[in-house]
Length: 253
Image (cartoon, rainbow, N blue to C red; front, side):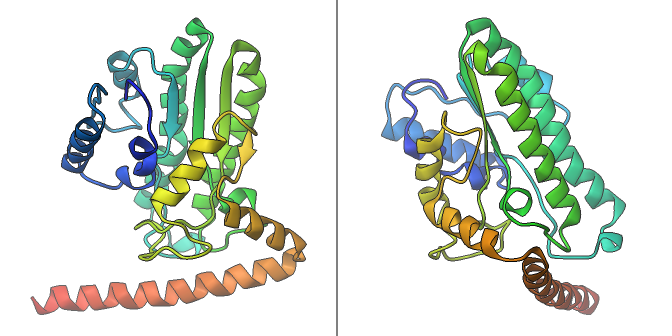
C-alpha cells in the first residue's frame, strides 16, 4: 500500500492470508474508497514459491509485515500430523517468511530505512511448551530468533526488525468466533500492533496478552505444561469428533 498508512489498512492482516483473492480485492476497493489518493496493489501468489516475483512487483516498500501463517486444524500428537501438513507448516511459517524477507530487505538496505514486522506467537515466546501443536510452536520459535537476530544485524542500517508475539486473537485460525477480554478482535489487535512498530525487537502489543505473559511466567513450568496439555487434549477430542461427523455425512451422501 502506498500513500498514508491507516489503521484500517492494517486491521485485516491477521485474517487476509486465510481468505480468497476476491476478498483482498474487496478490501483494496474499500481502502481506496475511504482514503482517496491511496494506491493499493494486490497479489495472488504462493508466498513460499514466489518471493522473488513479489520483490519484482513491489518497489520502495517501506514496511514489510509477514503475517501469513498456518496451524493445525485442531490439536494432535506429533505422530498424528501427516507429512503433507507438516511440510506445509514449515513451508509457509518458516520458508516463505525467510524468502520474502530476503527478497525485499536489499531494497531497504539500499534506501537506508525500512521496517520488518514478523508475526510470531505466544506459543513459543510466552508458553514454556505448546503440547499437541509441536511443529507450529517450533516454527514460531524460528520466527522469534530470526527476527531478534536480524534486529541486531540491521538496526545500524536504519532498518527495524520486530517480532510481535500475540496470544489468542478472535480469528478463524484460532477457532475463536467472538472477541473477549484475552482474545481481542483483529481490529483491536491491529491498533495495538501498529503502535508498537519500531519499539522492542520482541514484544506483545496487546495489553491483556502482556498480562497473560506475566501471569504465565509466575507458574512453575510443570504446572503450565499440565494446564496447556489438558486444554490441548480437550481441543483434540472435540476436533476428532467433529472430523468423524463430517466423514459420516460424506458417506451418507
